[in-house]
Length: 181
Image 1 (cartoon, one colour):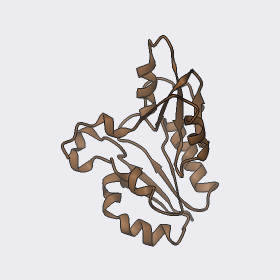
Image 2: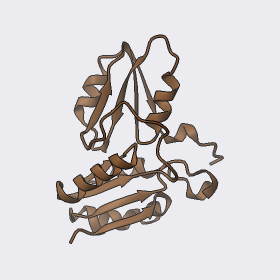
Image 3: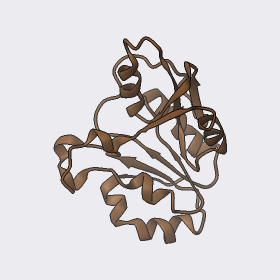
Image 4: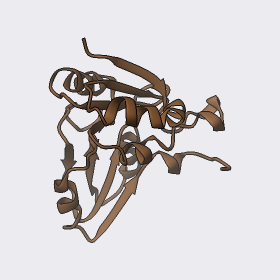
């Protein structure tokens, strides 16, 4: 049996110590589903899931995926359940998936890339990738886009790819929220 635990991102913050000591330091095969990851709009300021990426990267023995679509969530969830043996996390936002099809395969690979302008790279993960692609519509010169699927641990390949570009912009949930913290 593989334990699967689904909790809102903001509540994982409250259980941070338990996640570390009861799951991760023992390197148990548990799949943690981080619901309400990112901005959650009308759920209110206290339920914004803005900090899970930051605190999860400080925990040992953990792998974190951020799917962009429901199909990708399924693929990445299956990988965490049946192809890994350590602590797995899959974070997903409240609400629906991105509108329209994405120009990526739906996969559990570390990352996927669309090659465009060799000087400018846009990096994002999860549902925000749809916003990034939409922002490039109508641009005369399309930038290269790197979609990160496995966000923790971050692949060294991502850093090597980014180092080849003059301009690198990273888009995360936080820029979409209007919070007064």
